[in-house]
Image (cartoon, rainbow over all chains, first blue to last red; front, side, top):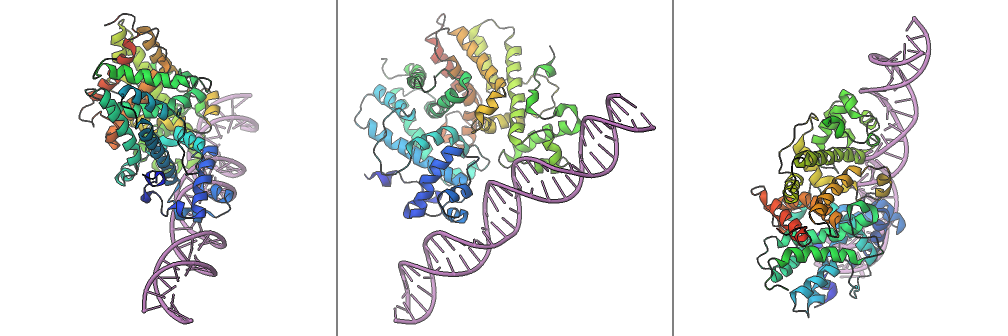
Length: 230
Length: 230
DNA sequence: AAAAATGTGATAGTTTTGCTATCGAAAAAA
DNA sequence: TTTTTTCGATAGCAAAACTATCACATTTTT
């Protein structure tokens, strides 16, 4: 199976495939970096156009608006995450090991797999942390969802829930726990950096605290329902 | 102790106290309803001005911008929540009971206390669910935080963490668990309504599923560290 | 090879949003 | 009563969000 094919975003997301032209690739690569730098609210197609020496309207040929552009970037992120999960857990048959590995991946503590995307992975992670909820916390959520554009996030969540179900088949809330872990893997480090009163996971000095918090959370919940006690 | 005094938002949040004039009160009451109806992104002071038959610039006299206005509304929400927690747990001496009551409150399943605020509590809850993360997921988060404007949220989180600590003094992540519960009490019902693949808590038909999920989560985590096993 | 269709980036708009300077009437203070 | 302050209204600007259209190049069709 080919990586590039596997993790390519939904065609409906972009008006034209940005990977098919030099300008399209520049929009995505530089747009990712610019949005990470100035944030979603301050990001505009005009500013991006100025940076890559083109015009606003040219960018509108590729993306309907900046919300779709953010969704395009996050789709990459979610696809890369799920792909990393699949590849990393391929050779593991122990549920506990799989869940532990999974938590490291969603907490961004696993090494990046080689890819040919040429995307700035640090910027992508930063955007996932600070901007991801803005793609679904909108009035248009149902329309966007009808276009299947949240499928990558749902698939990732479903896969994680599946792993939880494998370990503890009778736990009644595997999907809620999966979305909780995904959301908190983003939010707790953000709190640690900006609103430390809301968290116990330290700043960048101890990245393992996030892992410990999530592992403790997941296994505390699941162990009561586990197939066999550890 | 006087309710109105207790839950009054920080003065720095508004340029002028909106409770001090007829127009100010209309801005807050009608603005709350309008934002709930059309969402934060589509909400503008111009549209609100048209609804309450005044001019945009008059609203700018009360609030610097719509972000501050949202923060003002959420401050009410957080203050009301914390006040409800204080009042509801006043006569309870059992940690388990207190945590159970607390979860019902943050899950919006506790009856509203009487207040004289005249705010649409349903709209306020809707805004807390769909818009609350937009107040801190911004580039300016550190500046806003320096102005102490997140204090009500931190206080609420701290109070919940305190209850967790009372029940399980050695649990190392009470604040992270508190913010997790607060965030998920908003997000899981939102998912249930719009992106049901991300959750197991049902739609509006069974509101108790959210409570069950959160109770199971919290007690699973804390019981291992509990002062005395139940 | 000529003509038609298509794709692509640039130009030049419009509308909406976000915000500010200023004015005059009314209320409060002196 | 005069003076000051407050408050809502008017008008307008700059940036952001989005669109219509053009010119040219490439590809496709005949």
